[in-house]
Length: 424
Image (cartoon, rainbow, N blue to C red; front, top):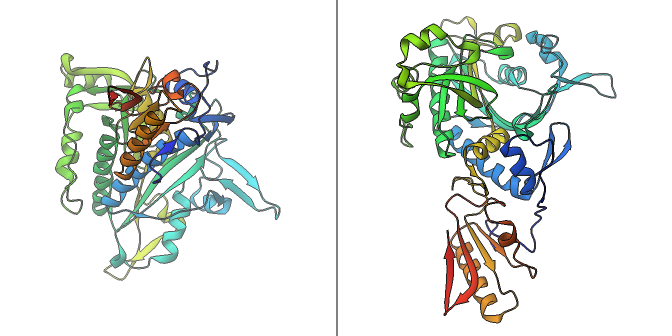
């Protein structure tokens, strides 16, 4: 049977009847109660089969849009050498969020919170000429930041899955073209996940640089205050056929032509004077992506240079572009839920159809359920089949609770006058 479907009798789905006291926001509560995650320590979670299934679907959409934009996937290790970070000057400056390790050979190591230094070392070892530019490399890897107060489940955990892309260009103009590619790729990524993201001017923080945008999803549980023009919400997402090798600046200009800023960059006077009162949005938001252009901040101290057309060595211009893949799952739940539970967008729903056998052991009903399950699975539909002998688990706990899609259909078998009841 294809891997897209599952029998509940074989599945591991540890549902909770009660909400843990420390689960303060909807996504944390629902993920625990629906058996998607289990806490293993402060800000550290095991991803159980249902949650992991959704996580992998989110990851795949992120990957597809990076590939579409021309980025090349690779994989870097989680453990990094401290000496690399000393080259950039960030080892001592980064702070206590960095988990520092000494191995048995007394070598100083760290669990990577980000990868600018490592990717710069990889680039400088393999690229020598301007003719080899531009380059965009990315990986999807677990990271660790030792948050002083981890909270809100996966939304602000210490260990998290992140997609980070790094661009290398010969000069600022070329680097801004790479920046624009990622800007558009992010708009498409979040739209495919069912989210309306708003690019906002943002502080560059410890990454550095002078150009940065956060991509924000509006939510009451967001960690940041945000201010924007509501016309941004109605803007059309760039199409699948977007030419990433063409001029993307008009798209960027369109999405940055209206006021939008996080609290760190907010200018109250500009907001009041530049945005009509009817179009003003003051809300809270969840950061789901962050992009940076930081020029030669890392390439100069780390000597990542290429030989230019004039025969002289020049440091490359760089950018980095992050998406919190695991964090996105929490953001989607915050945006799509009701009193019954999760209402997944179809693109990331763990299953699209639930089949419930209400008369397990009845020959005709068992045969009908098997037929539905087999035929839908063979057709590529993601099916969760409750074939348990006890009272139907999906039914007793609610198919919303265990998180089928917002438009899911449930075939409840029982047979009614030779037919099958379908509910949505």
